[in-house]
Image (cartoon, rainbow, N blue to C red; front, side, top):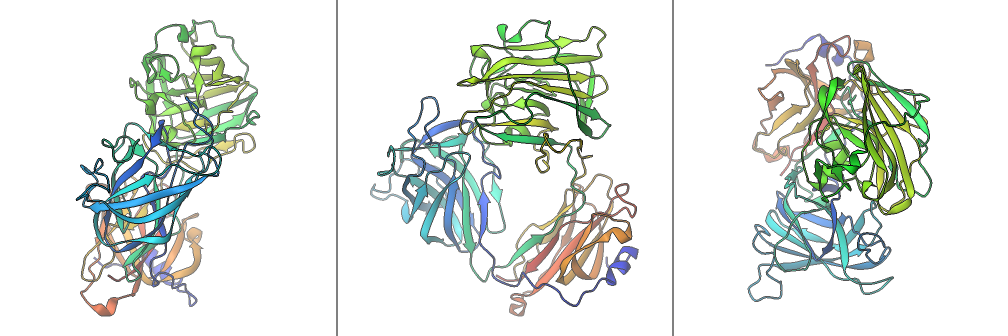
Length: 568
């Protein structure tokens, strides 16, 4: 239904003569990854990386990147090949790599065809090792199995076979952008032998065919205030700046107010849990282990949830849930990634990194006699494999939802490790930009608001009807204004004058449509594109404004903008 509400009338006065026409050009080079943030469970000898690739339009692949693990560390230690270069052959087969992993390209009748040879440069994790193809590999539209064959290096320091970091178990996530879909990834230790297991880290850079229809997103919606917050510390020889400090996290009902505080260390009086039986472990001991779920003497509220059960990790964090899981993803550490913090259960990270209770130190759980708080202590616990890095942290949770954090001696020295302090409601919840807890306190975490996101479920191809879809819609939003135009504003316009501070207009609208929410909490608007060659390279722009009471005076939010280039 076409309609011009008060909001739309106000926007009509924002027409600007100087506008940016920036999506009628061919699609730019882009990247797609099998996971947005690389992750690690184990390291592997690497022969081949496999994946399936569904390609909508012809593309040219200029590079991949991955996490190699050839930097003189590990158990057993791998030779240090940092800076070495080597060859990675790229093979393709029709349809899928499944069932073809053990068929060498040299075998008569092999389905594999060599399409390019790239040069890999070994970079120490968590840096990415690039694989550059010059010239780029051309790949026609269709469904392809892909094999990246890593040959041993032959020059540089300690030349030889290569290794990689991967994720176990393989999450089997299908990842798509406008042009390609990645699925069925896997690691093969010895090329063309057996099948492939677990999941490599792969990021592909490619350029689509110049005539391709596409859309771009621009700007951000309002408001991005996730509940989570964190400080991420890379490995280093010196202690992090938060060592020997204290913090109070004051629970306000929807967020935390984090302040510096001289928290006193309380000597534990309970028994050392590490001398007893663990609840879950990926290593069958107190290295990478969890306690059995513990029932609190009260219900602990936290942003976006509450719990009366916690599970304590040997690695310096507490799950705010009952967790019984022996997998490495749940019991293990971070190893240069943020994924275990973001995607695991809800948690508070006192100083989450790779600790080893099997070589000493203690883990304690003390209860206030009046049942008003509990204290969790990691006392003199060594970082795995680094005797000089000894850690002491203490976390207090009280009946009102407040958190006290004592950080004593801290160390994080092992190559490719990182450590995190912070809170997340977990399960893939959005993370904000990293906060520096040594310099940015007091800090107020978010109230959980996430901006609406505008996108399309298909490219704007001539003769088709893709949907313009608004996701991340706040619960309670019942109506949306969808603004359409043919131009972009030269700069975002802050809509604070309409009672929408922090919300920006990105397009120059001339059509306004209203639609109601679908059952899956999204707004969907069909976009019928006539079957006319004259529409090639035409531009249309869109931005959504869901009616969402309570977050600003006008009761409207804005999404990002999108700019569509109609084509093939």
